[in-house]
Structures are given as C-alpha cells and as structure tokens.
Image (cartoon, rainbow, N blue to C red; front, side):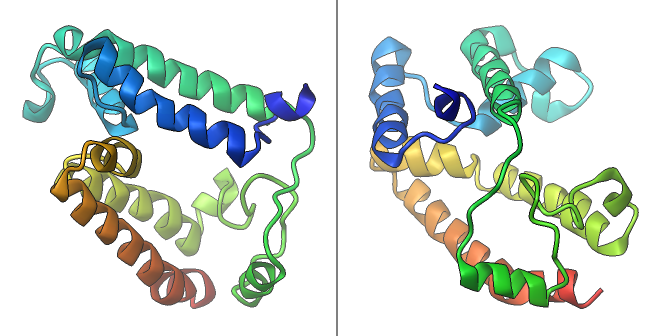
Length: 187
C-alpha cells in the first residue's frame, strides 16, 4: 500500500487510468483533460477582471477543473510524504548530469537547481523562473499543455494537437541536448 501512496504506480495501472479520463470526460459533458485549463480557471476565479485573458465566467467553464487541480496538489503532497525518495535514472543520464555539475540525487529533483538557495544563482533562476515563463508562454501559444494535447487532443484526433505534441518533443530534445548543457554546465 505504501508504494501506491508514494506515487510508484506501475505503468500498466497508471496508463489505462489516465487513458480512461478522456472518454469519461467526454461522456460526462464534453470536457477536455488538461492542467493548463485548470490553472486558467483558477486565475479567472482568483483575479477576475484583472487580465483580459482571464475575463470569462470560470464557473460556467467548469468547476470540476478546480477540483481536479486540488486533486493534483493533494496527490503530489501525499506522494511526497511517503518517506525518503530515490529517483531511479539510467546510468547514462546520471553520468551526463554529473558532467553538468549535478551531484545531489537524494530528493525528487536535483537540489543544485531546485531549492530556494539555488534560485538565487544564475542557473537556478534561468532553470526555474525563465524556464517556467517559457513553459507558460508556450502553453498559451499552443492553446494547451502537454497533457491536454497529448492525452485529449490526440485521443480526439485533432491535427493541431498532433502538431503541438511534435513541437513539444522537438523542443524537449533541443532543450536536453543544446540548451540544458549551456544553462546548467556553462554557468
């Protein structure tokens, strides 16, 4: 039971459960799965009328999105409470990260990049703040996030989602092989 609470679900359980969300949401009321929509509704609920992009009736758009977002946060919290975490990565990935100056693999994410102290360094700031801004911009520009396009969009056979998913993977590969070594290793 501890493994289930700590987030270590086998792919053959988690994959079908995620896959069942798409038809379930379509059956329940023609709803689309994606975290960026949930975050948009949260912003519209918290700061109504402050930004043009968030001026809409978030209640009509879906209160279920806020419940979903609360579930994501609660699930993340519960998973983090399962005791000491050890992320299993391949030996090649471990060696590549060590070459880039990442040595602490004791938590869920490298502490050299993801702590309050690291945020005050150039590589921490670029990784978290600039990277976060770019992810937010990309999500707005692509009209959805990776989960929305890859899970709902592809399941609904939407060509824009296919294009977006190809762009996400191309961007991820470019970031991994070209940008990450410059930001983490070069600073």
